[in-house]
Length: 424
Ligand code: IMP
Image 1: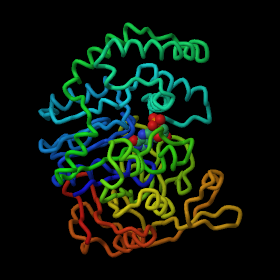
Image 2: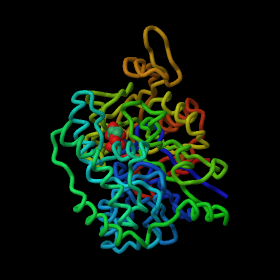
Image 3: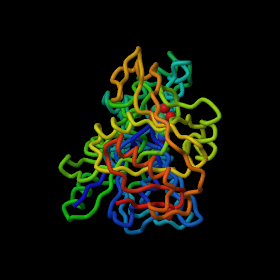
Image 4: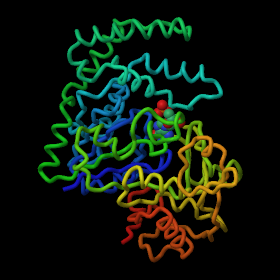
């Protein structure tokens, strides 16, 4: 039984952490398969709030083995800070496994990320400045260092020196930055290796063995479909594959291992960073959504851009990920409007698109075609039965289901674990 993938259907920040946490009782293992500490998951456990960047949200459950898969890029310094933070709050982190094949985020990746953005000026991506793009670029150009390299410091130094030969030229000659010294990096990464060694292993083997035993493995996507390097709004994307297919590559399992794909859909849409966003609300309505929804980045604290729900995006995410079901989050945030808009098409040069257009120009320049539905003002925060939702909210959800062509299985109406409605 099941390999379950959970992905974001929009531009990230859909509330995936809470859903992983909620389903954790049914899970034996939670695996991160892409991204790095650019991600940010907030989980509220009782009166405690936990923020994770690299560690899978399942870590709060002693029965769950948490895995950082080969597809992740790991900044060991950040990972150790996160481990220390959890331990100091009494959370046992012994069951965290880190793939020996995961790539390392190096100090020069962080500097290059910032330098590249500066150079791009107005055309910048709006990255999280965590070195993610440069780390994946090195992985693809085969000059990256991997977690396993830290365990053989001679090899580590050799690979590092080869990398620095090139990086220092770029840093000093193109960007006018200081060069990096191998000795300092070797010393730092040796000490990280000592701390992390007991967690480092062949995670693909362990994930497959766990599935072989009929246990439940949950593949937790970070970011979202529209930030995917292949399927997102390129170049305004992240440098990994948050889509469901990425789970196979980034965890080392075959596609036949995946039984369910859950899409997390925010009841409206947000994005951080630059790039097209057809339903963006650059007005008071957008501000009201941002304030009520607390739409500020977990990783960077940046205010998120907010907009109405976009059915084209959901249909696209359903196609790209083969969604079997969806979870609608933050429905409570919309409990403030007389009328709510749903985007059902894009208009560009007189033509109406009802599928997410493949050409970026259209996504950049189109006008959203809206359908207006009744809103509701009642608070949803204490509702636990679908039937108790205001009729207008039920209609809104039914329309999302109909337009997306995927059944809704859960609705989240607040940040706490118990603020969830199960739907048949
Ligand atoms: P990077 O992943 O830091 O390279 O940033 C590339 C783009 O992805 C930027 O627009 C970021 O704001 C966005 N991004 C990266 N991680 C997240 C996330 O966890 N949530 C939302 N947006 C993200």
